[in-house]
Image (cartoon, rainbow, N blue to C red; front, side, top):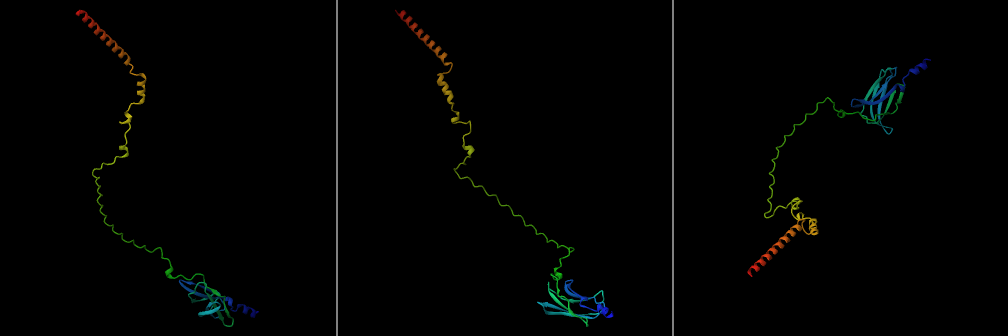
Amino acid sequence: MFGVAGNAMACSIKDFSAVAECDGDQGVIRVTDVDPLGVPAEVTVYLENNGADLRKVGTQVIEGSTAEGVTVTFDEKWKPRAEYRIHIAADKYVDDDLPILVAPDKSCKKADDTPPASSEKPEKPGKPEKPGKPEKPGKPAEKEPAEEGKAPTPSASESGTPAGSGGTNNLPSPEGDSNLAETGADSDTGPIAGVAAVLVALGVGAVIYSMRRRGSSMR
C-alpha cells in the first residue's frame, strides 16, 4: 500500500507546463512546476528547426516546488509560430520532453509601436502667412474710334420700314378706284351738270335774242 501511494505522489512530467508570452515588449518562455514533493528539476529550452535543435536558449533549476506551482522565466525574442523543445530532468523521476511549444501568431509589440496617448497636447498651428498686397487694377482698354467716313451700320430694327409709315402702305386701296369706275362720278355730279347745261342754254338764248333786236333796229 505504501509503495503504491508513494509512486502516486512521485514527481512526473505531468507536473510541468510551459508557455511563450510577452512581458511588456519582451518575449519570454515560462516553465512551471507543480510537484508537491519539491523535487529539484532541471529545465532546458531549445529552439527547434525542422525537428532538430537549432539553438539552446538556456537552462534553469526549479527547487522547492509546491502544489501551487513554481515558475522559471527564459528571456527569448521568439518569432511568431516559432517552435521550442523543453527537456525536464528531475532526479530519477523525470527525464523527458514536454510537448513541442509553439509561439503565438503575433510577436511582442515594441514601445515605438504603441499608439500615442490621447492626452498629448496637440501641436500648435503655424502662424498664418501675411496676405500679399492686392494688385492695382489695370487701366480700362480705350475704345477704338470708328473708322472715318463710315457711318455706323443700322440695326435690323432701324433699317426696316416701320408699319404705318410712307411707302406703298399710303396708296389708296383698289376698292375706292373700283367704286369710282362703277358710278362714273360722285353722287352730286348729275344735278350740277344739269344746272350748268340750263345756264348755258339761257345764255345762248339771251345772246341770240339781243342780236335779233339789234338787227331789227338797224333796218
